Image 1 (cartoon, rainbow over the protein chains, first blue to last red):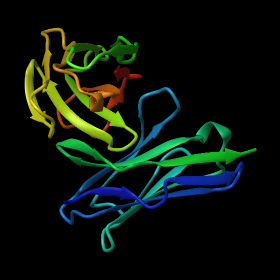
Image 2 (image 1 turned 90 degrees about the vertical axis):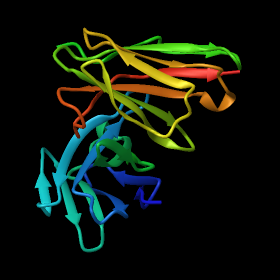
Image 3 (image 1 turned 135 degrees about the vertical axis):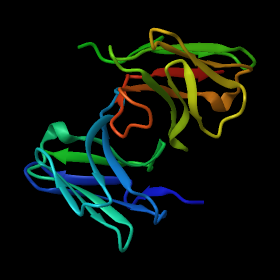
Image 4 (image 1 turned 60 degrees about the vertical axis):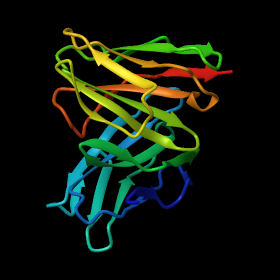
Length: 109
Length: 113
């Protein structure tokens, strides 16, 4: 069936480096994607979203890129900090949210 | 502004029992969604309520049900609990139905023995 998935379950980066978390989707008709962050013991928290009429969207220290040709999106975190350590989910909005499996980001001091 | 509040935070039940979980959305939010989170299946949509009406339902058996009250507070119920129902149940609220930006609570962790 159609799904949203992440490429890597874990990612470890050095504090201060940039992080890139990838996500692939299979439904060509998908037009709205969202990234969430879930810290240990908490519910997911909205980070940023992007619609299919855009290729790139920037927030505070985060950028989401959408490549509709290869059905891929990525979340870039600039100058990664220890507080960025969490599980990151991409989600596709199809009425409800369809979440990927998540990538656990670990930031080494 | 207070966030989404879920009660209880933790509970332990045995197979065959039933459980009711409660969710108070952010003030002014009329949509409440429920998700189940497990290590194996990840985050899976259960249902969404808006103005006391179920607007959407995920692929879960009829043992899973919910409702929403006139003050937008919501409850979900799971009857005849199975071991596989052990999970973190997350409630999320939003101002409108089928929103991309959801505000999640911290969840109710259910353990079924």
